[in-house]
Length: 489
Ligand code: UDX
Figure 1 (tube, helix red, strand yellow):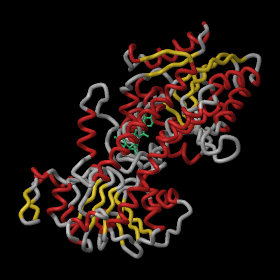
Figure 2 (tube, protein in one colour; figure 1 turned 45 degrees about the vertical axis):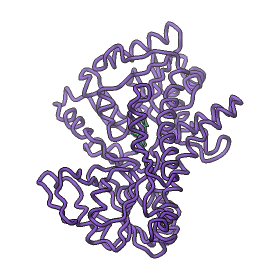
Figure 3 (tube, helix red, strand yellow; figure 1 turned 90 degrees about the vertical axis):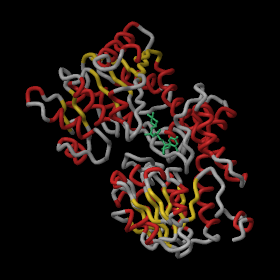
Figure 4 (cartoon, helix red, strand yellow; figure 1 turned 120 degrees about the vertical axis):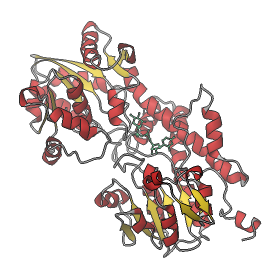
């Protein structure tokens, strides 16, 4: 194995499920490997530490998980090598901004070619463009020793951050793409027998490598497309100025079993390391095949996502009388979604950047993202008016507006039924200690106290009773520009 986010969790799960298999996680980065070896990976993923500690507690002869920096030795000893190498979108040259940068995968392939002897099965785990298995087969057989034989398999990973351990332990499906030859099928059998230790046989799908590679990016593109579709409808709901509500539209569409309810939650848009990269990859493939209308179709999914973030920002400005210059605004959540510390393509970045560019004083709180990562993710923007806070109460104190950017459950409002509201005074039952104390937050804010809910997570009626101006995605609000006049403001 090698670098990449998936490498550690996958290694831990294989070692946990297959006690007889010796798993070596290899990475050139010493501090990263040291952190894993100490049982303290640098990112947050629910359930990961528990699995790691079970495997690490095994007595020495039975301990089957190692973290090493000697990549070459790890390759020489392995029969099965999972490539978990980073393949970011290219920021230079041909295909810039669209194609995947394959330099890391080529570098590791050359190392494998140089040091390998005997039979090796190479498994593509990284998200890679279609045709990479063919490229690897060619590169390894051309550059490898005559004593070495390589069989390339595509085995894309479908885990989502925040539920990675669950997705690895109980995958909806495992794809194994192989060459349609006797040797290719034999290699696929070997990988399948590893997964069969814990995955039901009928969940393991076999196919050719191209279909497997395409299926991976197609699945992500379709998931992102659903969210962009519901977000396009949220824009229509808001623009009607009537009582249309994207949550109702989503609930109604999701009840159709042919559509289903997942990935239909309207909000400020999707982020993460996969959706954008995979769609752009699909766009690049389509363009390379001279299918310009196909490329334009998928590109519009990304355009819609960017437009959603811009629209949300413009709505904040419009509600706050067209200017936020010098105004204190709190942003709750910075990760691209709840239950992860990852900020890759987080919609919060566009929101915080936009507010800072408009001259607002922005206080950010996220329960899991470290301050330096927030600053790094914001990139080249003037951070003089950015404050990163250690609690939501600190972030919201004296704020004019609170923007909910990530759907962490700890930011939730209690349901109206579980609280007793009496003239704006909340008497919380005991179990409500898990929720944010919105009454305390609103008490410390400056009037007119806006709450912009970018994730449609909060109970608007509850917050309105507590005295704020509540605005959510996908329904018109009395505080939208243009409506103020019609409601006499
Ligand atoms: C995704 C795929 O789900 C996973 O199968 C694949 O292997 C990797 O890419 P991930 O990026 O971890 O996983 O997150 P996901 O849960 O899919 O959410 C992506 C983004 O969409 C997040 O920003 C999330 O907040 C947003 N989202 C999700 C919505 O806006 N609405 C929804 O209904 C669901």
